[in-house]
Image 1: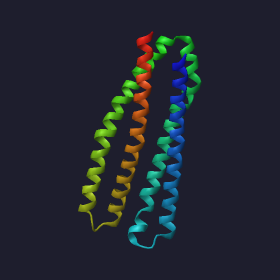
Image 2: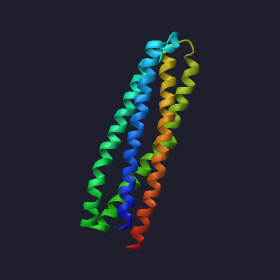
Image 3: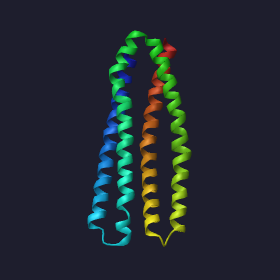
Image 4: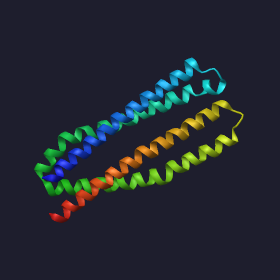
Length: 169
């Protein structure tokens, strides 16, 4: 029965992460408004659009995370009570797929994305709009690496607990 409590705590942590990402997205939108209204230089004025799009992306991603995990809080208990062994097996399968996807994203895709943007910033030193886009994308990529590495650690911990329960069954 301990695993259901751990599963519920994991889902609540994912929902909390979604809320925190939403707050960050709102802060990015507020910063974009600041650049738009108070930006004096051409470089400062170039940031507002990429930041609006990045903030909106963060809010949309947080919504996806929230709506994927919030219903699990209600269904985990029912699934566990119906068949504990099947629940643990399905969660192990789901977390294995998530672990694979997070490995690919956190260790390969996002770092390459940030490096490419960094190299391109140097190449486009005369274009303020392109540089603003690239710098914003680098910051977004770095932020996503932090968020996803936290999610990966939480997922690995949850998967280890599920494996312990499966061995004990």
